[in-house]
Length: 372
Picture 1 (cartoon, rainbow, N blue to C red):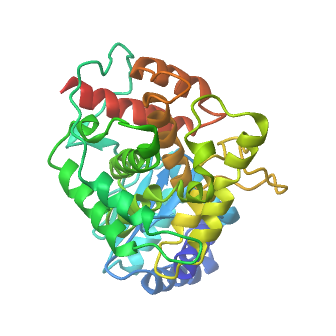
Picture 2: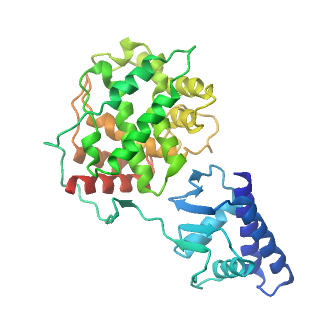
């Protein structure tokens, strides 16, 4: 990612220079040449830059610390109504020069470039563009669920875990691959959310449902290939820390007392420590395990001394899925909620608990699946 970050920095310096001076300034050619060289160094067949809400995603990987240049580039692109740029192999010096000029000059429309594609990130489901207006006039009563066999596979993988033994990563990846292949053929995603049959199986069922919902969200945002699979695996393991919480607490038939809840709040740390020791596991897994109970505004748990730490965009995706499935599942101390109630709570928590862009996207996605 260092080479991609370098290209973004050089490109933004060239754009700023062009804004301050002009394309006829002596330094413009030098900066354009440097930008093209950095681009060629950073790409293979293509370099994909997307803006999802306020996050910069390069080649499918969210950039956690975009820096001043990355932040300024996002502002420039947004002003042009652009949230996605694809640089294809074969970009010429004249193309990169014209692109820099078009981005730098206020009010100037972008033209068509042979090897540079610009546009907006579409939030889509099954090729259908979703409308922005959201109505909460539906329910899931009567929806027939089809519990996937993968729950048993997840259960087997989790049962193999211990503080001294690594997880079967290959088994988890196989489950995620199956999910992605399956619901690309079947738009009714709720069909693959399984009800909790017993309190003791909540951990496995919940992990499976959160994976389905998280991959579903991620794919709708244009995330694909390796990152999509990594989000799926990390979502499966988001509650791995609960493997180290006593069953008496996890399966308690009633609300937790303060001491018990304090113990539950340690599971993100337990999970992150456990998963961080696994060499062949995506680095997203310990991050999401640690952050999925952090909030969009920095509250939640674990509490950190460093207030400026932002919740990773992938953790934000999993947090939305986690909240939705937790509330639609019946627990020993409360009944399940319907979709209308859950969505109302999610919208109330937007900007505080959840990324508001992701909340709106999630509601639109679920609304679309229920209307088919």
